[in-house]
Image (tube, rainbow, N blue to C red; front, top):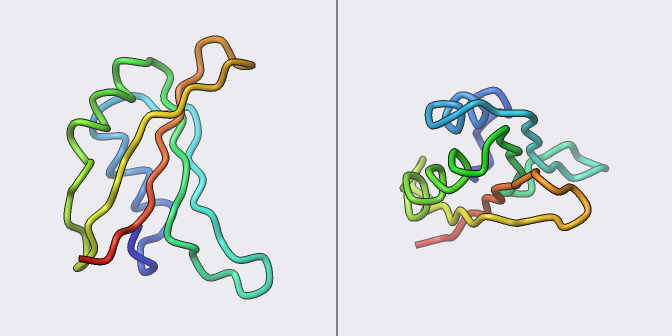
Length: 88
C-alpha cells in the first residue's frame, strides 16, 4: 500500500466489496511508518476473492498494489487478503 494511506483509508477501500472482520496496516515498530503492506480479514471467503479480482493491480497514489488471498488452515473459515506495494 502507498505509505501515505491510513488504516482507515485501507479499511474503507476494502470494505467496498464486503464485510470486513479486521484490518491491519503493518507499521515499523520504531518509527511507526507504514511498511507498505497490510492484512484484511473478510467475514466471507467470496468477498475476499472479490477483493483480489477488484484490487489486484490497482494503482493508488502512484503505486500499483498486489492483492492475494491467504488461507489459514488453523482458522477454518478465515480468509486474509494481503496487500504489498509494488513500484512501477
